[in-house]
Amino acid sequence: MPVSRTFTLLLAAAVVAASTIPHLLSGQQPPSRRQARGRRPAPPPALRTTAQRIPTPRSVLGFEPGDERKLADWPTLVRYYQALAGASDRMRYRELGRSTLGAPFVALVISSPQNLRRLDYYRELNARLADPRGLKTAKDATAALKDAKTVVLITSGIHSNEVGGHLTPAILAYRLATDTSAATRAILDNVILWLVPSLNPDGVTIVARWYNRTLGTPAEGADPPELYHHYTGHDNNRDWYAFTQVETQLVVDSIHNVWHPQIVHDIHQQDTDGSRLFLPPYLDPVEPNVDPLLIDGVNALGTAMAWELAGQGKTGIAINAIYDAWTPARAYQHYHGGVRILSEAASANLASPIDVPFDQLATRGRGFNPRERSWNFTNPWPGGRWTLRDIVTYQTDGAYALLENAARYRDRWLANFLTIEGRAVRGWKGWPYAYVIPRQHQDSVGLATLLGILHRGQVEIRTALHPIALGPQRFAAGSYVVVLRQPYAGFAKALLEPQRYPDLRLYPGGPPLPPYDVTAHTLPLLMGVTAVPSRDSLRIRLSSPVEPPAANPAYPGFTGPEPPRIGLYRSYAAPMDEGWTRWLF
Image 1 (cartoon, rainbow, N blue to C red):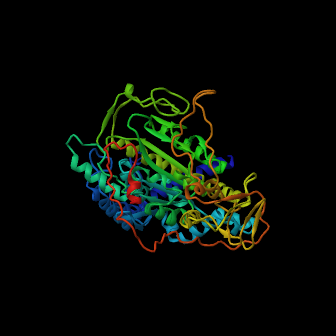
Image 2 (image 1 turned 45 degrees about the vertical axis):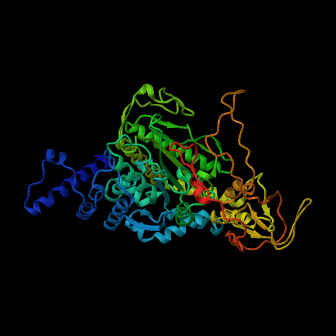
């Protein structure tokens, strides 16, 4: 008899014995084959106990997330996250600070209990990969890559009328806290997830209370008649390079700059009458200072998520449509080694269901037609009823697919992350060696603000210890110098150089293709500051990295007529956000 055959029979006998002996010892009959087939194996007692004591969203919110016409305010959601983290050894609750209106700004860090006990170790490992100058040998790099975990940041709810984003994090967190499947165990073992349930906690309460107050009235499902972010309105997601708002600052300072995520998933909603879900790849243009390997990662992950959701039977998924990857205003991570995976689920009327006939799906979408099948829109949605349950299902399953990919391809995400940061440290061919920023400016506040932005973005700023000559130009000792041989050189270059938006046409010789959004982000032009590129090494000594000066303007006093009284009018259908006026005045 062949050895393999003998081994197989012995193994089968051992399995039968293992399943029978415990019953013989206990005096019970072993289960029949039919009973065994019809019964799932019970989880270990520890897992059963854990799952039984984890609070469900319903137990705190009073409803299932996704139920029609049901929204929770922020204090209620915070109570749920506190209860969930208090009961689960797979997550920890963190209050990062306070929002614009004083609400708790919170995050959950989710991973296996073993990983959570060693968070400081994994944070230090990832920091070494983010700045490979600290890896002295190939052996150091190999050791860091072997032990590190994929760090994922999932953010939600930045636009408060996109109400699925208020609830999806609760569903996702509960699933990760209770699920015992092999896929979830792999996620917990290989990924450290930072989950920010809302990037605008104030707006969660503003929208929920308005919605609940208007239920059953003609205003049901309409946006509230006030800004759901009191300074930026809907444009708080354009603050990822200027850092003007406290919520942006908290995420950048506490998560991005500390944990350096390889993957950032930003959960959004879009119009009611287009695709049911958008995922990357993005349309052109791509901002030229983003590492091409990073864009490859965006394309691969977005497409993999779309494929996974399509395999689950979800329809109406568009890729390579609508949104571009041009501005750092929406994509801090693209200049810090991480991919930005934007998801945009179709909206309902807040939490109220809608009916969208197929022939009323809008054809205005850039790059696809929701009524026609195409390579990037392979299975059109047939139209019909669309509910909050649909929204949170698409969002939750999409986020889970992303986490599965982060776990399965941990080695690749980490290796590519190290490659991206290593390229930045070595410098890109064709880039300037450095930017020189003279210290003397009439507008010292503008200079300090520009330097403060770079510093918050972890760009190293040095000063010249000797005078600098760049052709006919002379700069005094003490001038600021930003060398583009550092991990986040791309962020510095993107903000210091003038932009030249590509000349994209609807068709060859045709009219220009309208940009999706912001087209320029040159800080020297915005701040009235001079920044001069140097193509060659400066050949002078530079200081160690320095702190920028304070940007707080000081006025010795006020004389003259009384300040003017300024009145502002807000139309219900305002043509642009006016929250900036509150910030200024």
